[in-house]
Image (tube, rainbow, N blue to C red; front, side):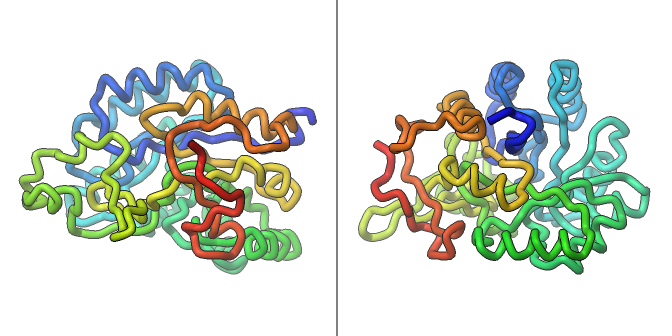
Length: 306
């Protein structure tokens, strides 16, 4: 299958709190991975200040020189005037397209006539809304993570019928972003107030597992963000995505094993993924329930990867 007929692969923003050195090492490696789009920035918590906008711009320039399309992600939960000031600077960066993860970013970008990517947290479910956003500068949109394959197929068909040109991106790999809160659950785990958290989430480069009484990892706590406990993995759905009109598959960064994850999805879009389950990518439970219209924690392919 020629690459031109397959999905584009995108690398989402790092959702966890890493050190500057870890970010630098990660994106130095990512420059050589077969992904076409890289989204950078802090989309979760404004207290994570190790990386400034200028730092992200510097990484973005290096990636762009290597042929990547770079996008800057906005913060999902805006809580203060300081957050709004940072958002204005991000939207006015003058170099890279911004991924709008809340309506204040959409307002700023559309009012200034700037193109943008609509993040999954905007909860876009119907062609009327997509049509409005497309008219004010939306270049691409991300399907809500809980949207099923059947519902997305209908929505994409409705968009085509309505003449709405809105390329769609699907969250294809990683812990699913489920919710955001003004409280920091990781700080609470360490009995610290949010404004004096001492950045304890940096101790958990892939989040803090929240287990049920049966010891199943139900959620992953990531500061103010709650993620799924299992990793969504839609490698085997790549042909179905391409067939229904999805244009981009998003891979959410993890601290370990991302090169193997990217290689597996690249193989899948080229039609060379083995029929049986491939080798384990990372040590994690796998889920794909939402995609199949079932509880998100479900795994249609059986047991978790070892």
